Length: 282
Image (cartoon, rainbow, N blue to C red; front, side, top):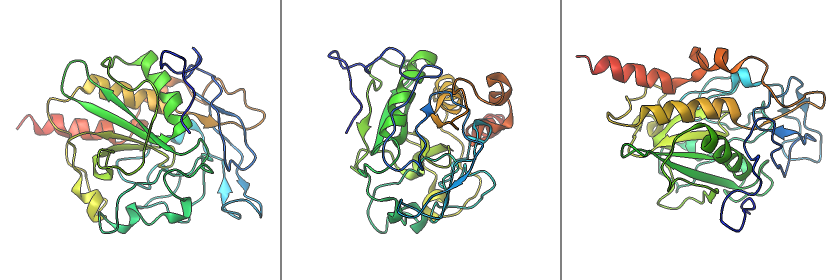
């Protein structure tokens, strides 16, 4: 079920996505209820008890400092490397996103994740899978965010406040249901929060992701709106909702925004752009 909206179609509540705004959660959260935009994350890892989904796995323990992964599915897990999300814990409490698509399309690691249910699984913290589109108002550039419904709803608010997007960009989440028009895994340019959020770029094609090879991804296409890209990447890293420990205030991260977003932890998006800039010189 999509998040509520006002009668004019805009997200309900003027504070959606603002610093410290409470983000609705549902499903299996390991007992945590304090997801907030711009939150600092959790420092306490707990073992999921018997009788709950994924009993015996760990939940929590990761903070915003480790929010960035890279452009490959399975990245963004603090201290864990490699492709895929099978049998992993939940350092940010949120479950990893899952890609739709049929058998035989891409490497198995992209789709062999039935343990997390279907795309419309309401047990997922934050609700079923959803997406939002963000269009440039200066070039023919389209980005999508893919995550759970609650996260996408919150990020729409944060991005609207921080970034300049075209007027036809999403104002509410849309279902991510595996249709032919949905973003594809080879279009992913950055994962966040233990691969529970992805930023994709229409027209990008990382065939190595489909083959299951974690190699240097191809450069981004020339002529895209890099200002919008950088704003989206920074805003997601700074504002994506995180669960809080009961003693956390929930309003700020553990380090300052400028320090966090100006360092290499901005992820592979920045690296891809640097590689493209260098290659254009020759």
